[in-house]
Length: 168
Image 1 (tube, rainbow, N blue to C red):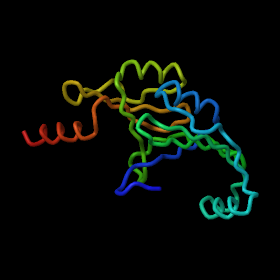
Image 2: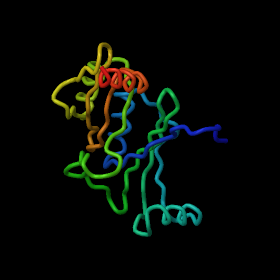
Image 3: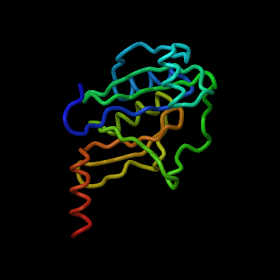
């Protein structure tokens, strides 16, 4: 049953190697698997109708893993098998409309950056940026080019500090 109000529930990320993606998000952010990865075929009548409604009739097979953050936000990893998923050359087209990043709140940016690098991810900003004392950020990519920000303060703190800076 849904809670009253609006809450962020999950984000879906397309990847080309589900096992690598699971290991990346578990090793870097400590996400937990809710269920073991499974193949989802578009053959069961209800699933077929739902998937065709979402993806069209060309999508025949997808492998899905469901992970969750400590605060209950889901990360749905999808490896499309038929047709096969392909890596984009540029996944950071911020000037085009749509989602261009997700953000993880982390305790220690430097340690998280080391985990990202050692798990085949990369940092796309030239440095860690200090927004104000005790609040830093960096933009990164997972091994598949999905863009995410890491931040070590709350969203509310970040916005409040930025508004204080703008108005002074």
